[in-house]
Amino acid sequence: MSLTFADLSLRKETVEALNSHGFIAPFAIQEMVLPIALIDGDVIGQAKTGTGKTLAFGIPIVERTVAPNDPEWSEFAHAGLPQALVVVPTRELCVQVAKDIAEIAEGRGIRVAAVYGGRAFEPQIEQLQTGVEIVVGTPGRLLDLYRQGQLKLSKVARLVLDEADEMLDLGFLPDVEKIFNSTPVRQQTMLFSATMPGDIIALARRFMSQPVHIRTQENEDESAVVSKVEQHVLRAHALDKIEMLARILQASDRGPTMVFCRTKRTCQKTADDLLERGFRAAAIHGDLGQGAREKALADFKAGKSDVLVATDVAARGIDIDGITHVINYQCPEDDKTYVHRIGRTARAGAHGIGVTFVDWDDMPRWSLINQSLKLGLAEPLETYSSSDHLFSALNIPTGSTGRITKAKKVEAPARSISPRPVSKHAPKLAAPSSEKIKREKSVRVRTRNKKFKAE
Image 1 (cartoon, rainbow, N blue to C red):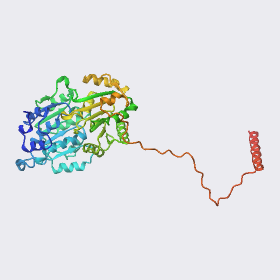
Image 2: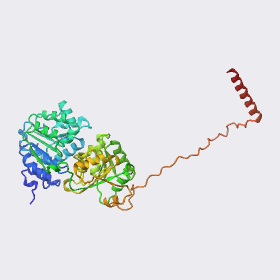
Image 3: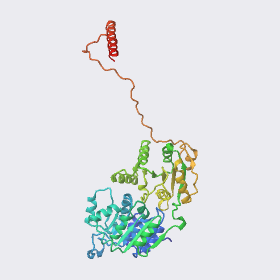
Image 4: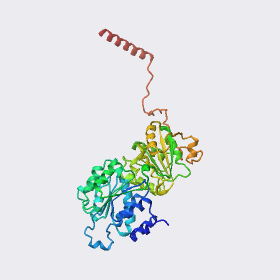
């Protein structure tokens, strides 16, 4: 009989909240982390993306937080001050993690605040002043509010660093160290990441007390992608990519799909092209305002759009249920980016399909990715939008074209120029007589001769 959350030493309210959101049994990372984290042990959690790391740290901090509905709240000395802090690298992940924690904390009245840039300070400050128990935030905005005196970290007992390797890749290490140093009464530190580079280990040694390192994959499989992802790598021509993408999006078994691009310009252009072809597409990239980015994600989650075209800002930690396909429209920069991109599908044990377009110029980059991850796909198959193997491999109906709506006709401007209307009152001009033409010609000749003599 498999272990369930009800079998663990969790509060009744927490178990009920988990069950109400469809979480009955813990995943491997959760089952291994919870016994240690629930007794305030420091943890380094390492697992493939999409395997439930958020609840692995979310459940313990909710369990150990004193809530407004708890009997001991009236005597709690730090009521209203943050008791737990979760630091994440991106705004989208901040919103997602705060939502997940709030769902399992709702039964006890625990207040969770999401603190991130791209939004006005005032609503976040107001929420902090009202009182919160758990804060989830990005490093920059957390430090801004801390320096202003609006965010009190002096009573934070539990600190979580999520997606730590991404945090370091984005250059947040100095900010993370300042946050660690600003939590003097910290009783527990948890660090979660898909990979463990040397800088992460050094950080753990400095700020953690005898941490237990938990990994749910073999050492040699540290960068391995989710095994249930069906991977296709196609050598594509740059001018034919949009046609190939449009056909893949008509696959018989396709559900919500994420399309990844390296550049913001390509991301927006691809989304615009798909919209013009009749697909329900939305874009999310760094040039969009935070409001537009959140709306694109919300529409995608709600089903208003079923294709989300994104740069790597959305590649980590965004847990959207039911994504069936991930398409790398542009080849990823490295093996880690590849892992996290296709990790948006096949989450929580589901099946998914990953497709990567490799242009001729991308072959050296792809060779390194393939070698590092041992994918066995060193020679991508040359593919065009009309290739039979594209249709058969990805279950695309025969006869599918590059659009699902007809292109709008563009009216060509008229070439002929209509004559200007002439008023009936305008005087009629008589044609010049032959004598007049001769006189004017004679005058021009004499004038030219005088000019030559003067020179």
